[in-house]
Every structure is written in structure tokens, then in C-alpha cells.
Picture 1 (cartoon, rainbow, N blue to C red):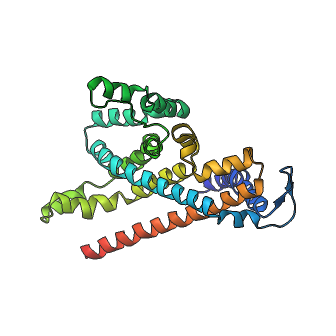
Picture 2: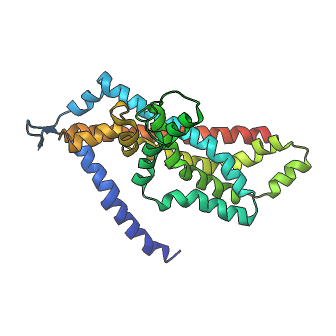
Length: 283
């Protein structure tokens, strides 16, 4: 405990330099103006926040929320059975399962994303295989679609969901399942009342990691969605690097961070409320 006090100042310094101070700078810029050349002018202005309520940007932001939430839900539905299987398998299977889950991290993110271009384009692997099998008469437009972006997001962020859930399930006290079985609970009831609540921390961690990573991602939408799929992160990137409208880009960043924190808090409260209901049901 005495040594831990010496570890706290470096952590606080690191967070201040690379998280708190940059965020405060972004907040400050969001209330400023810009001139005709795109330079930031130190004049108080709310134009960036007013522009956000334009139907165009509201629609893009809504699409971002829907895509991020849908990616998170699909990752959860796919990852939980996989994490459950690995956590309850033999040590040898667990080792190989974790290796296979982490293999994508050994490859550069851009390379993994561009690989989907080779698979989904009209002359790609998938269309060539379907034509060869005679299942289609002409190539299907799979690239530069909403489905391609969703598939790329799920593929890239599944490990962020599997690993936290696996850790929660692997650390669970298995004697609780034996006790539930002795009390006459079926396997399904034991899963609902014992396994699922015990893995709540892993679900919450994985959901937050996937949602935050997805909502702030612009590389996948650029590569797999093209101009047909735009997220708020693409707009923020364009405002800072292309349009040179830093106040508007900063305002979008502030709105994005605030709404993400609100959604995470609501999700946390929903999970806690469900856990309380399960506990009251047991009592």
C-alpha cells in the first residue's frame, strides 16, 4: 500500500497530459470561430454546435449510433457462445482457442481490412466462387455497402468481446453450478441465474470496448463503405484535415464523447438493474 502511493502520480500525470488536457483543448476550440482561410479565431461562437443539428449531420450521427450498437450486439451474440466453449474446454483447447482468437492482432489492422476488399469486390474470391458453383449468373455488389461495413466491423472487433467474457467465465466459481444442479435447477436456469450474472463484468467490458472502438472508427467505412457509408468519425476527420473547420470538428467530437458516455452509463445502469432483479428473484 505504501509503494502504491508512488505509482499514482505518474499515472495521473500521464492521463493529464494525453487525455484530460487534449480533451479540454478540443472543448475550448469547439466554442471558437474560424476565418475564411480556415484559421481558428479566438471569438466565442456556437456555430459548430448549431450546425450539428442540421438534418444531414443528425442523420449521419444516427447511422453511427445504429451501426455501433448493431455491431456490439452481433459481436456479443457471436462471442458469448465462443467464450463459453473456450472457458469450459480442456486446457489444451483453451490454449489453442485463445491463440486463434488473438491471431488477427498479429496482422496490421489495415491489411486485415483490405483483405475484405479482395474477398467482396465484384471480381473477388466470394463472387468468383459463387459464379464457379453456378449459384449466381452475375457478380453481386457486396463491396461499398452497409453490409460490408458491418461485416468488417464485426470481424475486426470480435476479439475485444471474446476475451473479456472468457476471463469472466474462466474466473467464475464452478461450485455455484453444482449447487444449482443439486437444488434441482435445469441447465438453462443455471445459466440464466448463475453463469450469466457472473459474466456481467465481461459483457460490460466487451460491450464498451466494441462500442467505443466502432463508433470512433473511420478506416473501415472508408475502405469497405466508400462514399456510400459515412460515420460521424469520417465527418470529424474531414473537418480537421480537409475542410479546415476545427471548431465544427471539435464540436462534433465533444458531442460524440458526451453521448457515448451517456449511453455507456445507461447500459451500466441497465445491467445493474437486471442483476438486482435476478438477485431478488433468487431471494
